[in-house]
Structures are given as C-alpha cells and as structure tokens.
Image (cartoon, rainbow, N blue to C red; front, side):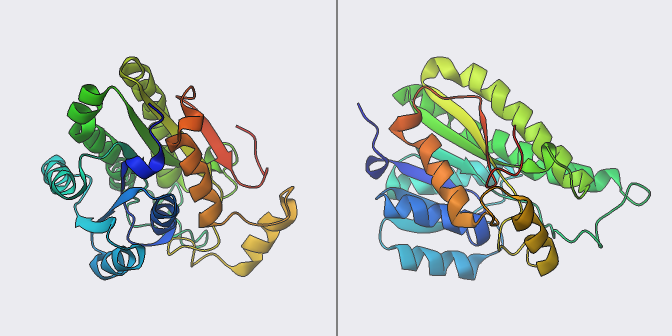
Length: 254
C-alpha cells in the first residue's frame, strides 16, 4: 500500500492563516482531503476552504481543550473519514517583535505555560484523538512545526522557543512509542518566515539581515516550509521518524 497523499485526509491545526494556510494549500494541490482547523479565524478559514474546493472544509476547535479536539475529529471523520495525517501548526497568540518581547526581568511563568499548552498540549490532544484510527489502520503521519531558534536564538523569545524545544522532545518520544504501529512523527523547523501574521511586526531590516547571512540569500517562505511538511507526510519518508528538518535556507544546522 503506497498511502498516496491523494487518498488521505490531513488535519492541519491553526490553518486559518499564515503558515497553516500554506500547508493546507500544499496538501490540497496534491489532492488530499484537507481539514482546516481554526480557533478564532473563522472568516479566513472559511474563505480558504472555499478556495480549495469540495475536498477541504474548516473545523473550529481549540487544540488545548481535549473535548473540543475529540469533537472536531468526529466532525472531520463524518465529512472526510478519520485523519491519516496530523500537521500540528497551531500557535498561541504571538508576535515576533524583538523590541516588544518579554525579557527575563519581565517574563512570567504564565507566558511560558501558555505557549507550552498550545505547542505540546495541543500535539498531545490531537495525537490522542487520532490514536484509535492510527491503531486500526497501522499507519499514520504526524508532523510538528518547530523553529531554528533552538539552534540559534538570535532573538531570545524565551517562552516561544522553550515551548518548541519541549515539542521537539515530545516529537521524538512519540516517534518511539508510535513507531511499532507504522506511525512516523517528525518536525519541520523554519526560520523567520516572510511573511505571516506572527512575523508581520518584524522590521524589514531584520529580514534583510537574515537573508544576507543565509547561504541561499533569501528568507524562507511559508511555501518553502509547506513543501518540507509534504515530504514527511508522503510515502517517500516512510523510513524517517523522530527527526527535525531545519528549513531556513541553510542558516543553521541541527
């Protein structure tokens, strides 16, 4: 069985806008059935679903709430069949603005916890909701979204980066537990993306500085990231699990 993307259903969390929307478009282009999860971006999620056509639909749900995730998966299953692929992209509200970030003297544990609840807690809730399907079909793909700030914290976004580091650890431990049932779990880590809602506050000078330091001479786009996600979800990555692929034009090495 090849498990072609065109035969599968993918759930993309936080897909109403930004990187998540780019990932949803990439899967739709490959013919997959696409479940667009959103928390508050109802209008943009609905517009994206309409753009992608009848094999896509928007589904509301806060990934930090296990009950909402379970209900969302039920609705997706009724519409498209149970998700075979999970892309956990959802991000707690954040703005990549170095001047406005919380420095250590002002950082509160509640900020750290808020980021972790979405990054790690959201991944846990979604995987648990999909486990019965994964177990039954002995196949599945999970792709989490990380950051190259782990390797190069050029701007110390403490709460965001710590949460993504924890998500990487969870990605690897989940890969170990889910591997025997044919489920792979991998992470795609981007650099600063040009441009998403979260990076909209980043000054152009910062984008230009990063481009100048990057071997490819340009800043990574959401579409660049989406293509890497497709690889991990595809049959081509069937023997790859527990890995973190940094997609930033060669700026850092994992």
